[in-house]
Structures are given as structure tokens and as C-alpha cells.
Amino acid sequence: MSSHKEAPLISKDPVCDSTDVYAFVSPDDPETVTIIANYVPLQDPASGPNFVEFGATSGSSGAGGSGPVQYDINIDNTGGGKPNITYRFLFNVEIIDDSTFLYATGPITTPSRAGANYNNWNRPQTYTIEKIVDGVSTPLAPVGTDTLYCPPCNIGPRSTPNYSNLSGYAVYTLATGEKVFAGQRAEAFFVDLGSIFDLGDLRPLSGLQLLKGTASLGINALADKNVHSIAIQVPISSLTSTLTPPTGPDDPHAVIGVWTTASRQTMKMYNSNGTQTTSGPYQQVSRLGSPLVNEVVVPMALKDFFNSQQPVNDSQFAAAVEKPEMQGLLPYLYPNEFPHLAAYTKARADLVAIFATGIPGSLIGSAFGYGTYQGGKVIAEMLRLNMAIAPTGTNGAGTSNLGLLGGDLAGFPNGRRLTDDVVNIELKAVGGATIPLVDKSYTVDAAVAAVTQGVTANPLAHQASFPYLADPHPGFSNPTGTPSSNDNTSINYTPTS
Amino acid sequence: MTDVSRRAFLRHASIGAAATGVVAVSGTALFNATAGASPLPAATPVTGEVPASTATDVFAHVSDAATGQVTVFHGTEAYVVVDRALAQALARVAR
Image 1 (tube, chains in turn green, purple):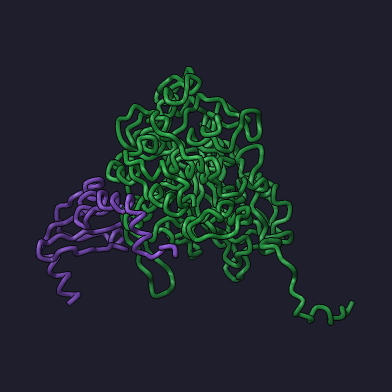
Image 2 (cartoon, chains in turn blue, red):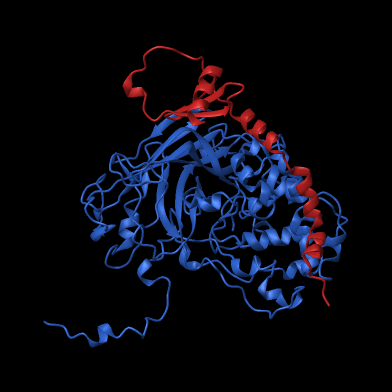
């Protein structure tokens, strides 16, 4: 979750496995939108000696870069379910000194000049960016340098001291006005994985579960995990189809649909010398827009197929949204708690609006303007954002981590912020909270108000400015624990000097 | 005693199971949908000497020797060639 290891095949290819997409009006720069695409799920910070990196070509150094991967951030600004704008990221990895196994050959520090590799980083990762507009590709150049570096992974105080300096070096401004960052970050998504996938248990409601347990708060399974992020901050005026800022929330051009994809070359050969050769056109293997759709809506047998498809083809998955499996499971797993939901047999037009067409503003209120609706031209699952809705900030007045359900127009499913509790929002929505938007005769079950996974956003995963995701958890101190008392070697050692 | 058998569980989840039936797509249909979304360029069989520099890492996939369809991968491109003699020659090597 929200799309970590969500499909059988992609769960075995982590560097291509998109985990979360965020899109929000930048709280500290509201003339821009920030889009973040996360990959490589459930990273343990202590993951040496081969620390995590993006899928990459290896140049001539034999670095073993997994083969090239096209990482795309796609934007649909016309409602057609196809990308009008794509930011494409391609990564490379090199070995500087091929005689050592070390990732860091000493404390890694920032170089003295822009465009140079970090000092002592033996496996630097760099990347290029293309912007593809209606099929025409243009390379994007950074300002003040000719090479875009990812920062090294956060190993610990000896290998990566002053980590904020290292990550700060990897925030770039492009000549076309965008800011970019690509590299390891703290995992901001929060979910009680252990409980939810134990037959839909919600720890705070365990006493009501079919297989009763003891009620307790939830446990954020991702609290100490890291992730690899591709973040880009784009002027709003360059995201609209008119190339001008929207006039207000009621401007139909204010709405964009966002999703990320990862693609690999069609052919791959494992050579007898331990290297790999790839060939052929790129084939999409991962896709993510709205959280949890492929995870818990699309049936298991179709999940990897879903990952290969463009949003424009999503009418073939509409039935799974109109009659979600979770709608049938909730009344069964929590007997007598969801009687109205159990009796509801109509197609879920509310969920179709949230995930597949956008929400007409009229369903919410005049302040929501045009809503996230894109004209209903196609059924297309994307994360839609009305860019003219002003941000409420991370903890500002009117902010609710329940987003629209909490009366906060700037939160999910109007885009998605790092602190939005998308698990609770979607559980409540599937549980019936949003049915009255389209069916006034429906009475929401009382239990919906109590539905919660019982975990909150991890404050250690956020920062106030771009790329908004905080520095990754260091391997030296994660996982936390008590040093072993069984090893007496160091206790008995007497230094010679 | 609470009925939590697999059958009961799936029965109560049947609203989703019904959806699975609706959206299930056959393997053939999957192939057609994918192929239709991203058609590969067809190439005309060519003869003559190929420069050595362009003859590395060429992959060929014989999907059906009887119809002669061979997909050739090179660089970031794929070409579909319908050449029964080529397909059968490759198939003979693999026999």
C-alpha cells in the first residue's frame, strides 16, 4: 500500500514498483504544483553493501544497473486519459573505483564545484530529464551545471555525515523553471499493513471484527522505511492546456490528471559473464495515479495487466470500481455494523467520480468550483487536481488529513498531500460515506464515522520546502534496538595505545 | 459458532467476485488489446550485407513459425517480419 508490491509481477521488480503519487499546490510557492512519484517500496535503511538506487544503465563501467528504466510523470490536461505532458527521467550509475566493494570510500561530502561527483562516493547515480509535449520530446537542462546527481543513500554518520548538505546539493532548478530532485527519502505514507492485510482487521475496531481481537491503536508499518522519490515542482501556467494560470477553481482548465509509469525494454538476456543485455522498445510495467485502486480494487489476476495500460483504456476496469470487493467484505467482517451498505445494490457512481472521471464541483459546493471533473470524456483512473484551489498548508487553518471528507478542499481526492490519510478516506468512502453525494436517499451507516486504521502521519517524513519529503532514515540507527549483550569481544579488548 | 469458512468468506465477498467476472479478459483479448494499443512497425525483409557495427545484440522472437511471423528487437525498436523461410530456419536451429 498504497501501491507497494500491489501486483504479483511488479512486486518482484522493486526498482520499477511505483508506491505513491502525490500532487498538490506547493504550500510555500502556490504558483506551482509539486508532483512526487515514489518507487522501490519498503526499503530498510540498513541495506548495505549494495544500497538502493533507481533502475539504470551502467555506461561502460559494468556497474550492474538493472537495465534502463523509463520513469515517467504523466499529466493529462484535457481529460482524454492520455498524457499531454510527460516528464521522463532516465538514470545512469557508474563505479569510480572498481577494485573495492565499498559504496563510500570515506565520508561522502559535497564537491567543491557544481556538476562534480560527491567526494568519496564510489557509485554515483545521475539522470537526465526530457519533457514530452504531445509527442515531441525536449531535453531539459539544469541551471549552473551540466549533470544532475541523485544524493547517496543515507548510510550513517561515518559514511554520509551532514546528510542535509548531501541532499541539498541534489535539488536543481531547470532552465525552463521547474525544480527537480531524485533520490532516497523518508517514507511518508502511513498504513497499518500488518493489521489491514490480516483479513481486513482495523485494530481500533478489533472488538467488532468477525474474528474478535482486542481493540488498540494501529501500528504504522512504514514508520522507519525509506523510498526513492522523483519530485518535480512545475509552474502552474505550464501545466494547463492554455499555458496560462487558471482564472479560478471554476475554470475547467484548472484540472489536471496525474499518474506515473515505469517501463522496461522488451527483451533481456542474462549473459554467461554475469552481465545483462537489454533490447527493444519500452513496455510499461508499472502505473500509479490514485492510491489503493490497483491495490484493493482491481482483482489479483488483472493487476499486472492494469499496470500495462493507459488510463484511456480504463473502462475495462470500471465494473471493479462500481461494485468494489471491499463493499461486500466490510459488512461481513464487521457483522451488523454496515446494514445500509450491505443492502446497497446500485453501482457506486460516487467511487467512479472519485477515481475515474473526477468529482463535479456541484456535488461539493460552490467553493469547489469545477471540482476535479474533466468533462467525463473517458473513464480514466488518475489522481486529479484542481490547481486553483488554494493550499491550506500542512497544519494550517482548515487543514484536515481527511481531505474532502474533512471539509478541506485542498486535500485528497483533490490531488494528494503527504499528510492525507488516504487509507482512512478510502475506507470511509467505500464504506458509504460518499454515496450521498450522488444518492440523497442513502443513509450512511453509523460505523463509518468510527472507521479508522488508527495511525497518523509520520512527522519525521516531512519538511517544509521542496522536495517536502524529509531526508531518509540513516542505516546506522535504523532499525532501532538494543545492542546485543551476547558479544563480549569488544568488552575484553584492551586498546594497545 | 461463527461461519468463517473459505466458502463463506468468498460468498460474502461475492459482490467483488461478480465484478471479476465482468472485467476478466482472455489471454487472446489481452494480447489483442495490448497489440492494438502499441502496434509494432512492420518491416520488409531485406537482403544484402549488414554493417558489422549494427549487427550486435539483435534479438529475434519466432512467435509462430507456421505463419512466418518473426519479431526482431534491436536498440529500442522492434520490427515484425513475416518471412516463413526465416522463421522456419530459426525454428530448425532450435529443434
